[in-house]
Length: 152
Image (cartoon, rainbow, N blue to C red; front, side, top):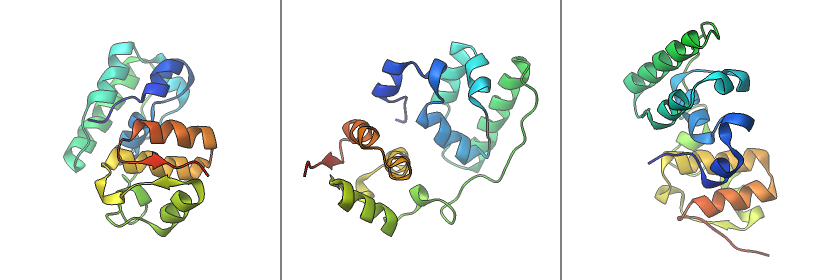
């Protein structure tokens, strides 16, 4: 199940950043919010956004509508919906490991089979590749049993 990562829980996501699991779901639902939007939501509302599933377009619409209602209730205004991400425009939804990710894994010593990763784990790996941050790489690999980091 997709969830807030251990290192995110330690920092306290409601205060410093939108958890990666929620960011993935925002992409899938075609929604964009600011950190200030996330911060004004009640703990129960944030937890709802973590737990709601977004496995298909109907669930994506439900997620977007729930988010919109929560933000309206928090006096943050109405958000606009964008085109949800799909495999044509984002690496983490591709069935075949993208060359850029294979190169990133080789460069950073990360080993693991793309096909063994869940959608959220692929999202995390692609996020790590975009950030190219050694500490973040270690934290993310520690969260994904199907990956290992071989030190040089």
